[in-house]
Image (cartoon, rainbow, N blue to C red; front, top):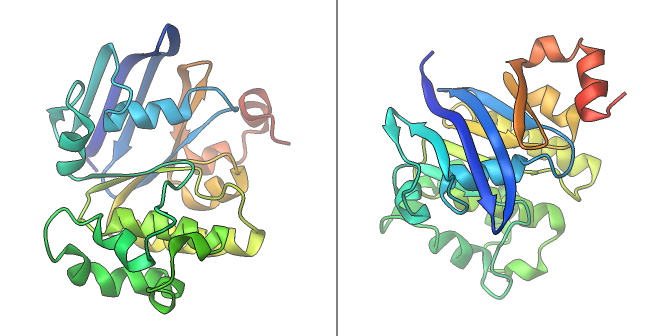
Length: 234
């Protein structure tokens, strides 16, 4: 299948710090691809570089055959890339419905996608008028993902969806991501290797700002040497 996203040797600085020193990855259309690596390896910065929040100083980012590095984040988002940040970034004082409404790219996006969103996350429909700050951590994570589904995105960048969630909620999140991947390509950052291994088709491992290994997840699951070396998982 063709690649919807190609990242070629990007170099990204945050202030004076050289965070990414040559990250390359491919995301085939219709797949779930996961970025793996230890804390501080550069996974979140890779997502932020793709969406334009921390633009790379060198290298290429190609989405649907078009170079997008250097474009502002709002322009990249308007091309059909959704971004769910690590810490959810919901608006606590707004209701669930208002959080979803402000994600509309065009008037009427929410009404057109509501059935799909509430099928994935039925809790949100039940709590639609509740302030988002009153939701549980798991429900807030659901809202963060749902907000990126309001406009019709071709690619979703999801950063650490399992962070801080109870095991039963992680299972719900796994199922939700699996279902939405039938409609949208997913690039996932996930520290929970069990969750990543259950979801992803492909993986790229990042170590100290460089991509060091790429392949099929089914092969990585059996590669204990690579898992120990780069992920510290046993």
